[in-house]
Image 1 (spheres, rainbow, N blue to C red):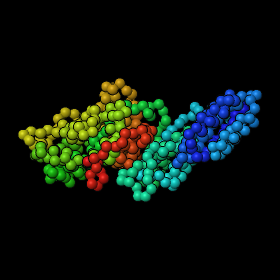
Image 2: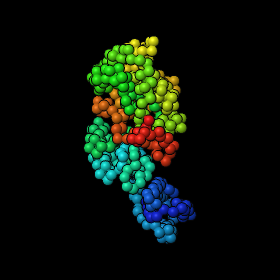
Image 3: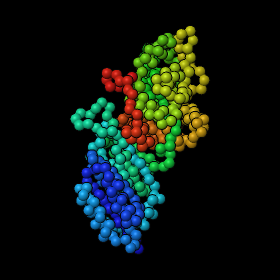
Image 4: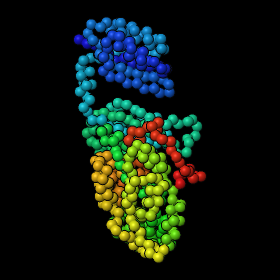
Length: 416
């Protein structure tokens, strides 16, 4: 009967170690059942699960490996694996796999301890841990620093709702974000990303900015807050707010557009998505004028928003066409997916308000971004700690594979 053994090698990394080990094993016709390797700060850890054919002198293989390890100043460990243990391992390959992504400005041991404890309590094993963010220098954190660790998990979660609830509690206590998703074929095969505009791609509610110039800022802002929290019907409240803008000069739109701040990470995210061949869209309950301005700034493919009526150089207080509310956003998302010939599972939707929930719920990946409490609780994924480009981490895209961010920063470190 063939022997099954697990060998591990650790020590200073250098070129030629994998070639040397595999060459020795090849000389003895050894089969490799599994292999894994990681390098942390120039220190190598390599594991190989081997099948040694019957009749091959195991002692010769062990002696050759010990000699090689000594020559490379590596530690070698050799462990026998029983046939029943190996069979259990093979049988486990059909079990569900999940990804949990930890997002923060920096990673601490306390974060890792508390998050991994949640996994343990719910019976999930950790198959792998990867750092997706770049290396952080010593000393003070750089402006808008990003840190991300991805956990690959295996097992069955009896109560997914309870598991998610506990992750959210830990995330809130630690002031980090924790995204939990199934590791399926769609995760790295998304093709379309649809964004809300106000308080998502830009750091403002445009209608509130217009209202401020019209002298009705407090009235409109109060209605906006209630609508975004889901306390008011969006379409009715939108018409009410627009009516208050009646008489505002058209020049006010240009003034507001000139001072809009693009959200942290938006330029980097969309530039990367375009490089990877994604299509992007703005589905906004705001105004077409500003959505098209943002389209030119960022290179967005599709825009759907509300058309603000202007006559003789002033705002009339009404809008044309169908109001883009929550249900309209979901319908538009379906239309865009059909136009692109993709499944809704290949779609990402990002928003912050209650009127974004319908599109977040039908997208394969729905992300509540710096969202209102109702939206955070209802959406499957939530990002509040980092900028929009943290979405790349949810797709498993490491910083090393991303183009460098082309940022136009204000003096306070925010994107223009």
